[in-house]
Length: 329
Image (cartoon, rainbow, N blue to C red; front, side, top):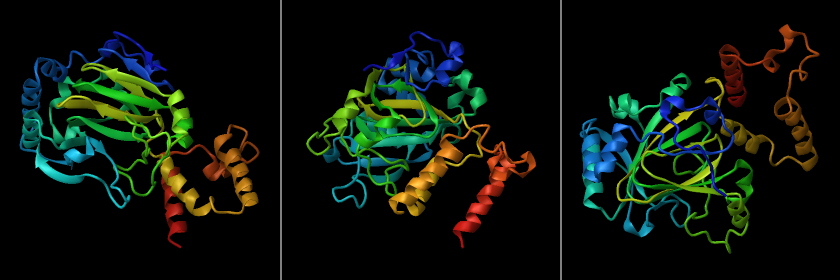
């Protein structure tokens, strides 16, 4: 299955419906005029030299894996840690190593542009997202693979150098993706244990069902891909110098917490209840959360609805404080 494609849209003409889509959207050539992309089109050297102008001496945190991991950043064999190490290096040294063709797998992930590379965003931005106040990050490395995971925010991923392959799965495929530990993760989000490049269907047979729903596409420099919130995606970088700029933003208010906290609390308080009690709580969650509408609390006087009323920044702060008190008892 291929992703929905909107070809030849310019940055200024990026329609709002794309940014609210619940399906992935491929945007061919969206950022082809960015200086970053133009430099990469000339050569890897020109691209790295362009980046050096925004802080070659800046120390940055990156991941390094030996040649034996074949670019796949993942767990170690016994799941006590990972198959790579974290280190800090000057940005220019990382660029030098990429250009030299190091046999190691190198990965500079999710590095906030406004903080680490002052001025870079000025001519490499998307005006249509200005009102969303996105977090904008640079991802840079060589040939590598990031395990299939999901992000809470919506994501506009813009390839600026090299080719990248994205394999996307809808949220409802979670049971077929064989998700790893929730409390030991490479970068905060749980990941699939299946190698998207060489899936072992004997060990992970349900992955065949996930593949039936997969959407795969290869992006070239200047292309962008809109990935809706909570769509699972594995990412492969296919060139010795490969880079991406992404924009993350949420359609919900900033005061809302991540639902992953709710999932963790549910593991603590709900999962191991007797089945009848779990069913009773499912009914409460359906009533107050998943099926909630204007009628859920309509029978209560408006001034007395408390946390059943629509949340605001103030009421969210009060609720968070009450939860902290409960958890500390």
